[in-house]
Length: 264
Picture 1: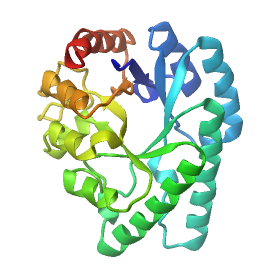
Picture 2: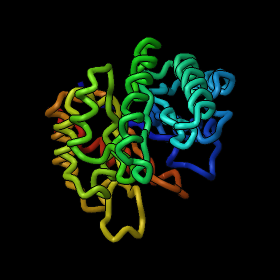
Picture 3: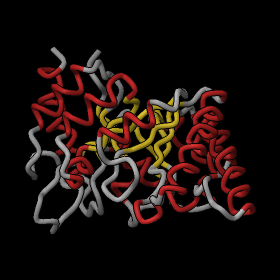
Picture 4: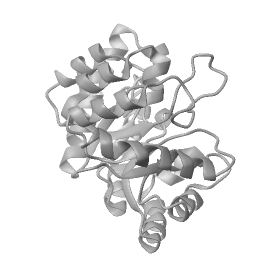
């Protein structure tokens, strides 16, 4: 099965509200999206019901929801913060079910907090969150992020050893920014990859999340690596601060020309 090409609503932040970004995705002929929820209100079932009507009318499928990292410190040492974060997470599971999503993308623990104790409590929270998501029919996906706990194959292996129904979101740009060969992360994550973020990386750091083909990543290698582990989910274009929506269409066309050969 050849992956569909989708887009993240995050690419149009902050110029477009999330529901308007969804409408634009349909106009640009993307059949599937990842919805990046930007505010506290957008993480609620009430907002999901509003968005569900929009995506149903447009005929666009919601593959995954992207959690806003700062709202989900499930490992907080302060009991009330921890309880509120977990309650918010359970609300997101309901929101995802309303939207028909299959996965949740989560950055998890940020590096500056990654001391030994915090890592241990974070891993305990991953077990809780992954099991809660699984019970709701969803896959919790930890994303490789240069400034978070998961950024290299060794952390992938640690998470896999937890023995819970956990998935991964592979991000090509973040692999480049972490100095990790994308294929190394892909091979480590293997068949647990449930979502893929597509954008290019340039080492000068002047611009982040570039359109594919405008950085240094070897896209034939990235796509063939994804095909080699049996990935057939959507390839989600996740650029940043897009001012001209046609850039998203061009990024989609770039992938459509290469994906059939990689999965042949």
